[in-house]
Length: 456
Image 1: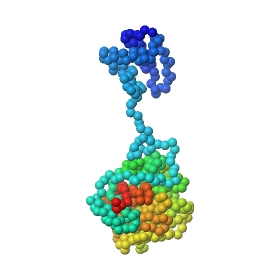
Image 2: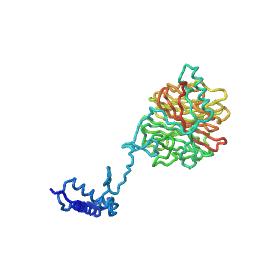
Image 3: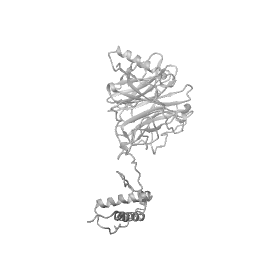
Image 4: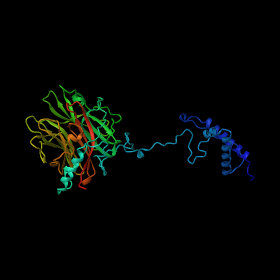
């Protein structure tokens, strides 16, 4: 067959362009979801594919010469591009959930909600801090190293230390951002779309009327939000002279449900302490609250723990005239409880110290805790100490704080919680600690990382 002339190639290309233009103009908008009319290819000379491509290329060159390239680019997108595109499309693809960074504040998506019966553990160390430690922290680490050099135990509890961490910007139901009593669960693969779940109570300027349980979520431990569909607070009390709430705690039940407990001081009924519980399979829709414990001595800072066989309710007995004691009760149904038991702690307290808050959890077959110890005459100037136990009854405690109030950035520390990562000598802790200003006007929660200090 005789090769068509350059003019013939241009005519062929014009015919193709006219056909494509006619089809594009007559096509209904996608939103109308109508059937496109059948496209009829005009009768053309029989050219092979290479000849047609040459004709289109010639037409592009001709159009460029007469200033028509912009028109053709709109009609025939992708000419001259190695990738091409479709009309009315963007060239930037939205990343799928699996490719989004782990620090996103949006929940990851999954076909079904995750209903793991317990928080999953991370095999990697926790993320690093984003603020500088205090000037005295370097000396604190050096002191630990010097002590380790003389110790036969290379991984004692006092070898873990945490510098001050950044303050968290938390959404509270009354809008202040001031909060205390944190309890945090971590799920490496997420639970209902989120890796971190926190319960806490707002406490603006020590206002008991706002001290009600809130639940917030995060995927990086720094940026927090209320999960979609949830309205905080979970429970609402008026505060003085009426009852007030405090001491929130989260725990996963064997059923895969998330349990939220909190303490209510029942005024004016002799300030009776009542522990309430609600349950959820998604962290958004919660059951009606039920009272699981009440009575004297005054009982605070409860920590509900599943042992694998039954429930234990740890806390601090704070009865007038009696030194504060760590205490726990046992139950198989969260209704009938054993007589109180008093675990041993080594070392115990100095004569000028007292227990104030405790957090306990079961992790990798052992019990871990963080205890808040204050001077006997005040709740100010307290420090946080690690605790560890094989059975939850006989405990070892660090004799130096994992973080002191001087290091924390606050003059006073308060109820705090930890999230363990790793195991053995590679065990690290995300520590969510709460502190308050002198005068109790400002209450905040910070996040830091506690790591094992080694001689090397």
